[in-house]
Length: 229
Length: 229
Image 1 (spheres, rainbow over the protein chains, first blue to last red):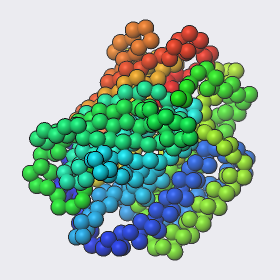
Image 2 (cartoon, one colour):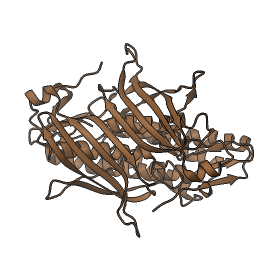
Image 3 (cartoon, rainbow over the protein chains, first blue to last red):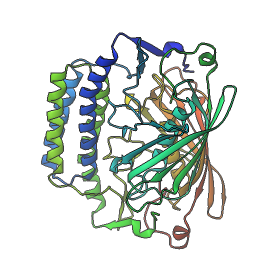
């Protein structure tokens, strides 16, 4: 059994300015990769051009592999209280699989995000995969449960109700804490289409129970780390 | 409101042999891209080499964009009864975001899949994002509900119980139908670590209600299309 503890997080010697400079450089690469992943799904070019594209991709891979960590990106924090999780599947700025989602904290303790889900997120024809909605909502709700990173949480249970198909394109999701009792935090959320002509009615409604792990409750990590999604 | 109907699926003039040849060519490109996405998260190369990698990525993008559809890949089928959903976020062979998952149908009506989740699927440090487990399980369960593609289904509700962290690496998931009543199909499933030393105990347990849409119930599509995830 894998376990998480306060040792799962590493204190980094990087300053916040260095972290942000690195995010700028590597975030631009990830943004390029997202466009490449997208067009690789849509392309109709012949086999010869696919072979040329593959050669370019492999050359880029070898270049980046010249110096690379062997393991995942993890979650890091520095002495200034800045944290980063560059590999995260939802918000990781260096992860081309992540949209990436950027979360906004509303005045009234709602947490929301507006972003685009392109062709790589397809399930039913022209629509967002139901499991992708679950992925995005799970992350949003964990962050919501963390109450602006004042507590660390993990997902306990998550219930999703699929109301109507969600077209690919602009979407908006929003979460809100509905109760807190001891180490248990309950969050409600939904995701909806946000394109032109959308009425904002939920495509997927979600209800989640998030838990503050005992080790985090007893020995809070002094860094800006919230959800352990 | 977006709707799905039997018109959502397009009959393709491609023969099964042509489909498989195309999957071979474009699947190899997607496999290369998965490795590139992975190393882009792990790399420690300097800014100059990132810039060179970006130039290669953009060159590949332009090459693939010379002829490309503007919209998503959709779900297609041919006169031989073969169907394909190349852009699917879980099983799409042309989608670098998809592992891709390959499903196996057991003798006893279980559906299972064993695959690797690498650094691009991270949530908690070193572990699979809870929402990624939801994404993979949702797809598996929809396919399970389709009973070897003898009916078309959409997700109604999905409940996930997170039991323990799931380390990145080899995983195995399995689903089984527990009841069928009219247009409602209930499926139970779980995902577990499958690496060396794993005991196979579930990391995430899932319970889902899948629905055969009224239009699909009344006018079955004559193609091998099951889950509308």
